[in-house]
Image (cartoon, rainbow, N blue to C red):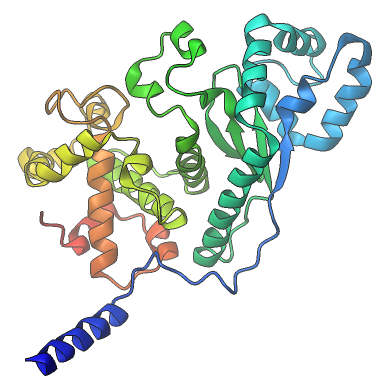
Length: 337
């Protein structure tokens, strides 16, 4: 009896070794330079009318093209050469709510805390380098205030965190902005890395091809979430997808029915934008299915399909992200809940 048990255990171990977790990779030989941490919010709030010109030059030298992107896209202001640049920046840094928010950010995100985030982000960069050795990697991690406009982004080789978007779900600023609970429940520090990496992946693998059907949207975002999980392999699906545990439980318990909804009535090949948006956009729930069904359900479904595809095919992450044929991924996934 004992001999049979031992043989069975050996067989299980051999099978496990023959089918390793594709996301459990060895990073010991992956070397990347540590991310340079820049605190734009600190640099910006040292500027005053009296030192504006000299401080502005230091900002340009320190942040380069990112400063222009920050001013125009994040703060919705003109660039540093715009005639309203000086009054716009001084108005932003002197605004009562913005200054109070900055004070709160300094308390929540001191330098050791930001350095810890940077260390975790650096591990993500290592994993990215492992899976995509020929692609350019981020060189900087920039923190900033965005006027409550942006949470996380990847631009100009920089991973960017809008710290004013991670103050906790009870933040008075989110109440002032009348942000719904389905958003604010994930606007805290534990969501930073998943938001940051997901934003990076969406930028890195921007879907430039036309996404005319629900299937295209479903598979594209399934790939994005799978790539995000590859860089954050220890992150729970609740953070990965920004779902509550109740919402995840609903998905798992109703997976067969959800797949039936997608596969039924030729719905996967639906190209009506309104109907596609009902299954892919943010909200409290997916009304097209039920009030219990979480939002962006097509993205969850896409992740299940892509996971099945990667499980059933010897495909690298690079090959997955290069594959543009959504139908091929669906067919070869053998996804059957």
